[in-house]
Image (cartoon, rainbow, N blue to C red; front, side, top):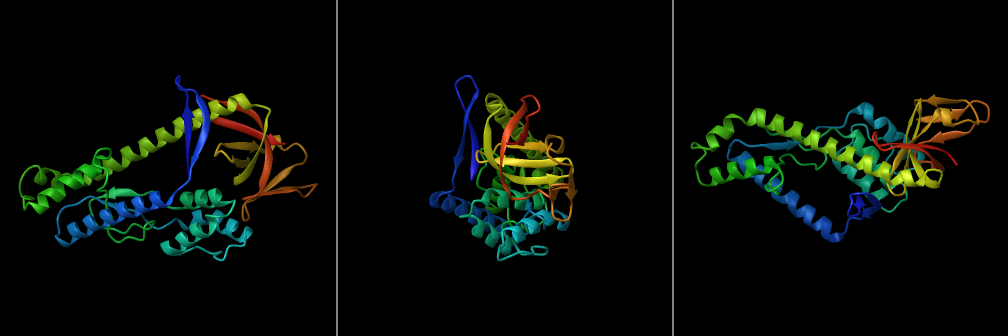
Length: 286
């Protein structure tokens, strides 16, 4: 599911539109993946210079929250430390028809390492691919354009001529630069979305919404609403008791009343405050 903020003619947010994946979407994506793998495998076999897209295995420490939530919702797979990409895919498939699917997908994404471009062959964990590149979008991604130029030179037996020679000699810094630029673009996009969502919620201060706890820390808990808006319930806003943080189970536990707030729990929250410039939304328990 993909969330997109719909704007009016003045650039002000109107609503959040949730785009569900369809059979057609899956077909297009699978076709693109196959094309990307085919090109990467071909260039590997011919020992041609190439840009590859790699995705390293998850950080074991980052899998803790995922394990907690899998046990909490009694998933068939409860321990994913050292799990294969196929295991991750089975978890996503199992969650696809369940109400906590956005939470599961979000936690899995946070646990995975960031994919990046390199000039050497390496596996792509998320796609369970031994050779992967970006070939399918040369009009919007510079790495894809480089792939097209190198592939064209290889097929024409012109890898020893310009511009292929110059590109091949600069692949190391090009891949690093492309990875950095990609991260900066993603960061800018997320920051823009946060600002627009905050702008949207500014008109709903004092209103109550239902959401799911998607993160628990010593200073509070993050709650995601059904429209994907995410905000923080700070521990100072939990005025009915003094809450302590259980880092092993990612819980906030009231010392006197014993109330527990845990990952995956659905709760009602009230919009307490909004900072549009910071893209920050504060909630309190309703």
